[in-house]
Amino acid sequence: MTPLTHTPRLALGPVLYYWSRDDLFAFYETIMNTPVDIVYLGETVCAKRRSLRLDDWLALGERLADAGKQVVLSSLALIEAESELKALRRLCGNERFLVEANDMAAVQLLAGRTGFVAGPFVNIYNQQTLAALARLGLRRWVMPVELSRDTLAAMQAQRPDAVETELFAFGRLPLALSARCFTARAHNLPKDDCQFRCLDYPDGMLLSTQDDARFLALNGIQTQSAQTYTLLHEIDDIRSLGVDVLRISPQSHHTPAIIQAFADVLQSRRDVAQVQADIGRYMPAGPCDGYWAGRPGLSWKATAGTTTHLST
Image 1 (cartoon, rainbow, N blue to C red):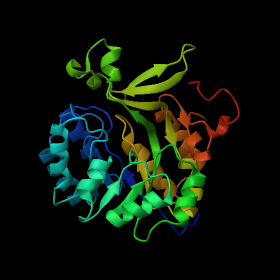
Image 2: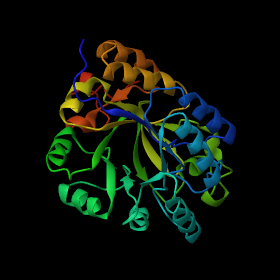
Image 3: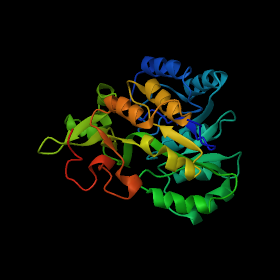
Image 4: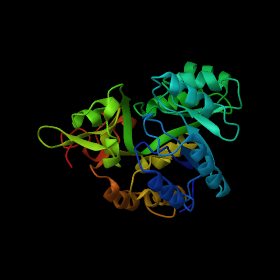
């Protein structure tokens, strides 16, 4: 098979879970030898997760840059205290790496500097917002996960020059953030004394319905889909839309194999259907792709229009 002309680059999003310092360093050691082009580093969910400090992320970023990766530092998506704002100022003030802004406070701090990425938590829902952020220095935007393929097509038609589009293409969907910690509450603990129980759930805490169907995953203050969102089977359509970057969200196991699977499909080295079947083994609660088609988010193309999409 001959590869199509437009080939999106691959990005590895920030780790959304609470992993130990050793686990983080070991994970990124494996990433250095994968065909991923861009690596996002940093804590985006909870300020209490301090396995690595900013200086550690910067040092890790240097190692990844030496391995040929573009490194981007990601900011918190929910700022709740002055101490968090102080840390955000330091992050945005780094003079080495591009920053992914995940809320408007970060956008304000980054405006007029050397450029920034708008993460999926920044609500860019129309061309006017995209144009306004481009005037502030936006280089790349990550489409919010709840938007559809048709919305993306409309946005791409009027995308400002020199602004790239990144698409969340694999991983549990980051759906919402709250001031309340759901993991702590599940263990009858207050948020201020959570005892870092998130460390016990390296891929989030699965939540099921009363009929035992996988429904959501709890990740501290973040709510995620239980199912794994995947657009691997939509690669040809994604190419036609001119998407520049595909984002894979890290999970505690098999991330290098998932990256390789996407790279193989993008380079037309393997059949999409076969690769999709292979990586299906890495989805603890099965796949979903509903938002892409404008359907309920938990639905899957193979079961669209049925009621079986919640089953494991």
